[in-house]
Length: 221
Image 1 (cartoon, helix red, strand yellow):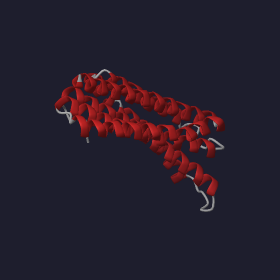
Image 2: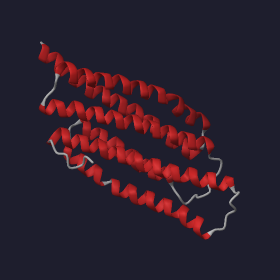
Image 3: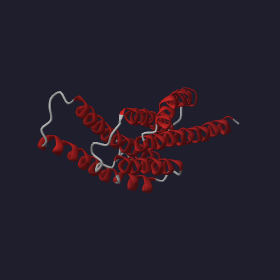
Image 4: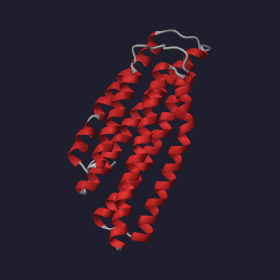
């Protein structure tokens, strides 16, 4: 009976991690919509909902600690619990990044660089997260490796987007007192940086899935 209860705890942990993933992805997608539409109500929904993500993180952290302390998992089970703990940490950070994006949406009143499509970049990064979660769901190491490779595309998109902004700054004479312009530039560069970090967290998911499934640390860094 004890072994059955233990397996139920492991199954429940995976289920709860996936539930947290669904919530984080939902909040992230709403944040992207708020960034695109400058919809204040959507932005505030993300910001005010961050507390629930933090609460879920703490609950799952406690579950992982209990499994470590009370069940003392070994081998594959140990890799699963440890990796799940790392994944919820990445999820919590994506929640924080979503809150950042919503905050940028509240502050942005204009599109100074319409040629920089942050929503497209964000959608591609979000797809990486969703696919990485599915790989974790199925212990699919092969898919996880393929998803991680997509990070190169996100890096290129973010590099190109940042380059547009920096090149404009270099070729245009702005006054040191043009605070509005500097605020816009800073906000856009922060948006690009945060979207790149979202994709990085998806790579972390993939690394942990490969570790669970194949006991391979190749993507962990």
